[in-house]
Image (cartoon, rainbow, N blue to C red; front, side):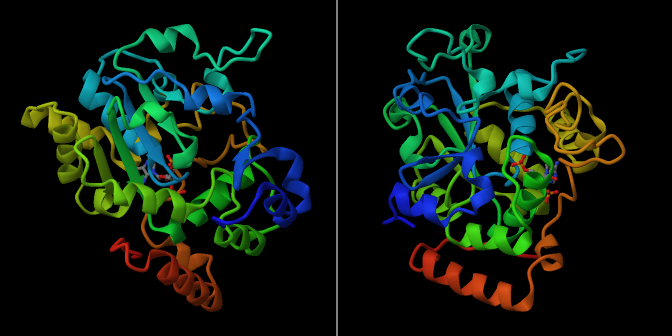
Amino acid sequence: MANCDRESVYLQLPQQIKSNVLVEGNTVLPGFVKKRYINGIRELNVRGTDVFVITWPKSGTTWMQHMVVQIIRGEEQGDDQHLFRKWIFLEHSINVQDTDSEGQYTLSEGQDSTDPRLFKTHLVPRLLPRQLTEKTPKQIFVARNPKDAAVSFFHFCNINKALPNYAGWDEFLDQFCKGLLPHGDWFEHNIYWWERRNETNVLFIKYEDMKKDLRASVLEVSQFLAKSLTDEQLDNICENVTFNNMRKNPNVNPDSEGGLGTNWKKSNANHLTFLRKGIVGDWKNWFTVTQSEKFDELSRQKLAGTGLSFTFE
Ligand code: A3P
């Protein structure tokens, strides 16, 4: 993928998705990312106090967002603002006030005046704000094993209007392996952040480790953010961020009105879709043996020499 240009990327996309995406260099982005935002995002004035949660999609972004907001702002008793409204989705049109004639990228006022500003993004490294490395805000990268992340994203593309329709799992997996899914190449994201993992302002954390020891993960995130928690606060946050409790909480669950609201391809009135399974190993229900073997070989090649590895069950 790294050596592909825009034209050859475009040629490799399934016909039906071409009008739903933006191809920027060799990266495919969902249609809600406008070409005119790209430069503005690159030149964003980053503050040292900002916090960024950065992921390849479906890697536990929302889970981390819920954790971070409670660590930073406390539990906010009686607050019924949806989690998604507390965060700026950096590249999403909902957060951009781009009414001037030049179509400049400007964050909506309310969000820009909050301090610390909380940003979520799925942008590939070369499209992120340049100042991320100079101003050193806190940057948390959540990584999830690529097989489960792919399965979760496949389901999300099936239900979310903002994402393209794939013909089925085989086509989707083929696009994943080529690094052509919206939000870009999983390997590009993960290897870049893995290589930066020892920087003081970077936390590289794995979904599977969060599943294995939630308390240790909340503690790790709070220490990274330099926020000390009492045992009681730690207990409460751990309780609030369990899969079941996030599912039950309408102010957190993206399925609810305040979250993605009506942005669904089909009615989801009778079933919960965003917090779908929340497990490690669901990929086994989707990958055939041949697909799994081919994928493992691709992973071995791409991750060779990096030292980055994942738990798959
Ligand atoms: P599944 O589709 O495998 O269930 P993101 O927020 O990056 O879009 O990631 C969504 C994925 O994280 C979904 O995975 C969702 O269920 C899972 N997830 C969200 N909150 C979780 C939690 N508290 N515990 C475990 N998994 C969670």
